[in-house]
Amino acid sequence: MRLLLALLCLLLLAVPPGHSQSLPLDSQGKVNFYEVVRADSLRAGTLYAHAKHWLHRYGYALSTADSAAGRLVATQALAMYDRGYLTKRLHGKVRYQLTLEVKDGRYRLQFSDFVFDYYHEDRAYHWVPTGKAKPLEDALAAGWQKLWQSHQHDTLLGITTLQAELKTAMLAASKPTTQPLPPRSANW
Image (cartoon, rainbow, N blue to C red; front, side, top):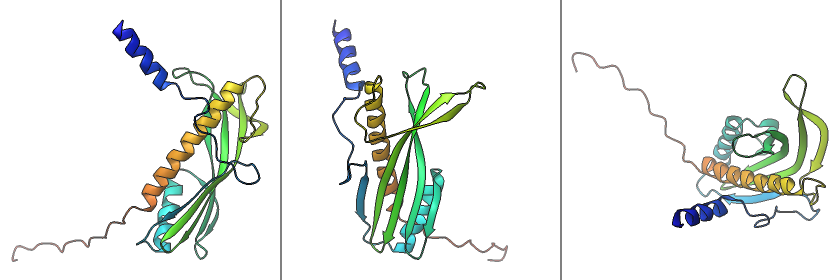
């Protein structure tokens, strides 16, 4: 009986809550993640290099890279699935835009323009976009409300994780370059 009760408690903790956190909305009602982070001892050029390296490492498509103004604009998409843990099936992707602006001692990041693109399987069993899109801030999805809320929750978790990883990468101290030692001779 104890084992069954413990298993039930674990299952309840593993299920994501339905409305525990909602997506942050801006004044126009669009989903928008915004943060200004202080980086006291880092110059704008260093922050820009860290940001550009992080964007390339995570596969973002850069649309604007202005080093003089310290501005990077990139796009990316999060995959959303509609089945369980073992038999995942791609349902669509949530594409978004990331804007990073750097100045001496601080940087600003903004995740915006969230749109869910529907995907389906073509006759060659490849997943391709259908051409239909749905803004992520829409509250209702007729016929698949629970799955839609799951996609919104997964997006919230994904973007929050990306914010934390970006913060770690941006504030990482750059390693000093070591100069190679001169070759040792027999007569030292």
